[in-house]
Length: 162
Image 1: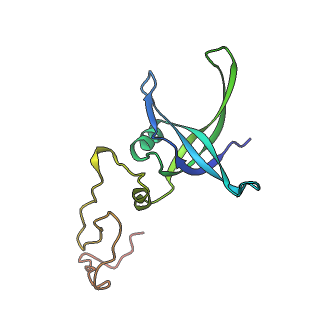
Image 2: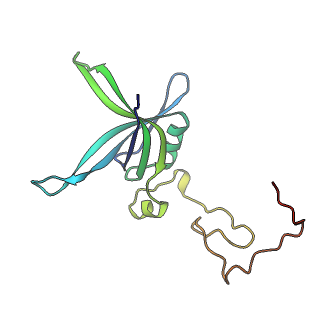
């Protein structure tokens, strides 16, 4: 049997992080996923809103780095739950249990769309290593002047390491 689902869409709200009584992290959020085809009468694409539940480290990751409007790729499985509402009616819900969640956009695209709001006030780029290869934005910049800034290895004995 196979129950595997991969979705790509935008978060409709900030993830809600909670903890079970035993301390296990669980995050809930929803993805807006566009359909690939257009409606014949309106000429517009329909959108599905899919509930996602992430557990443990995945829940912590999602709650820390994803916000409303951010593009996400979710890999997981479909789960159906039966429950009873306040009026005693039997209900059924479908949700995706996320095994992995990936960024579906770059940080730059998310910032331009207003969907990137890191916790703690902002992003700081890592310190530049010798040779200046880290860009101020945290990306990669080629060294100025071609590749002439590489240093020779002084302890190279000519032997392969394997």
